[in-house]
Amino acid sequence: MTIVLSQIETGEAFAKIFGPQCRKRHMSEALLYSDIFKEIDALINSFQIEEARQRLTKLDASKIPKKDRAQMASLARRSGELKLAIKILQPNVFGAGRPEYDDLIEYASSVRKLGLINQALILLERAPEYPKTHLNRAFCHIHYWNYKKAQSELEKFLNHEELATKDKLVGNINLVVCLVENQEYDRALKLLVELEEECEKNSPHLLLNLKETRGQIFYKTGKLDEATSLLEELKKQTGQQVAQTSFFIEKWLLLAKLKQGKITPESLEVKAFFKNSRDNGMWEVIRDFTWQLALITENHEQMNHVFFGTPFPHFREHMLKQWGKATFPIIFDWKDGRPWQGESQTFDFYKMKDVPVSYGKSIHRLLMLLSADFYQPWSVVRIFNSLFPEELFDPNTSIKKVYRLVEQLGQLIKKEKMHLTLETTSGGYRLRPTPGCVFKMHREMIFSSREQFLAHLLYQNGLSHRFRAKDAFGIIPLSQHQWYRAFKNLEDQGFIEPVSESSTFYNLKKVS
Image (cartoon, rainbow, N blue to C red; front, side, top):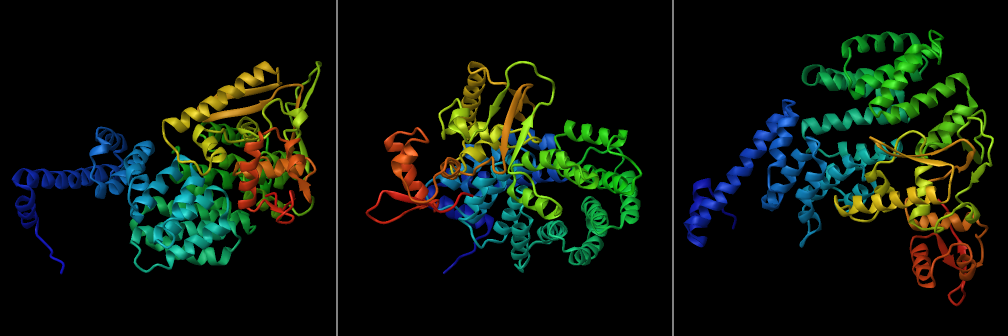
């Protein structure tokens, strides 16, 4: 039998069991966090973000009741205090007992926004059919430019009948974005019209996003006059706002003008757009704008630069589909371009002779990783996400681990007199060739796990079918114990298979 008690009756029940002091403590804590949540939620909704953050950072995370942590963590996430959100929820997610789905989803949302996309996807596997699992998975796939998977997850999310009105609206708007990227323009426009009517009444900001998407559809379907007219009007509405939507509006407007021949790639408008985007860290806007610009001008050198300087496989697939007239080379020479009269250096990080580090280990992977993106700097969190995808992120120890690796790489570059620069920027780290240095860039320069990286190295060094364990020992200098574990992991993850039960021979099954 379930008994529903009023607030006063609940207090009396506590008093009978634990005494009057316990009743006062439990009741005051329950009321305290309920009131705090309402107050901070109101601050965030009224855009008083800084005050909300100050209130949140004064809280003692360890004293927040277990049942209230997901709600409080959501406030921290929404206000941008992502490390605090993680700190609040870690005991629920990784402590004793099975975590609630709300705890898992909220924790995954926070680590995703921090840049730990791989860890978010792993966490979401533990709440497979929960509605917001599908929504958060979609956001993860969008981050990786995988709009097909994102669309599938959004459609599953929207199939749930019990969605809140706001969640349904967010899901549908993101579905429109995916439909456009997947070239389902008729379906996108039909849904867009329905959503515009809803946003007219409830959300001017989301309405602006939808209109920008309409302008993008006009551009992609060749209706350049309609695109220019709509986007010019939207640009007037946004004025001098430095918001994400304003960059997208400017991006598609400039591309429409370029395609119409109204401006050139050398125009002041285009140069100002690049500078403004760089200053505000809009790296993915720059990446896609550069690619679209290369398509318009049929600039093959620029196309190769974007292709080989992009670490996202799904973005590269998108490029291959869009540019059907020619194929990209297997290897691309990435170099500084300025004149050099001294001795040159060439690096192919697949070849042991070109890698002055422990071949196949973390420092080698870091070198590959930092050379994989010509646009977006590698933040500490982004490096951790790529090098240690299945390792639990700790805001203190994980960051120190990456700092140590980066420091070792900097020392190595100096010691070996490599013609490279390791730059530190506000957004993270950049690896760049200096005059006299050439990088041999392969199509795949980033790996999601150490095992995938080892499989690539074995393949690049001539091992694929029927090779012996000792052949691998000669390529990658791991200890025998390390190789024993590596072979077991490679086999478990489907990268290699033994030729027979009694044999020490292996076949390489897959590389990517």
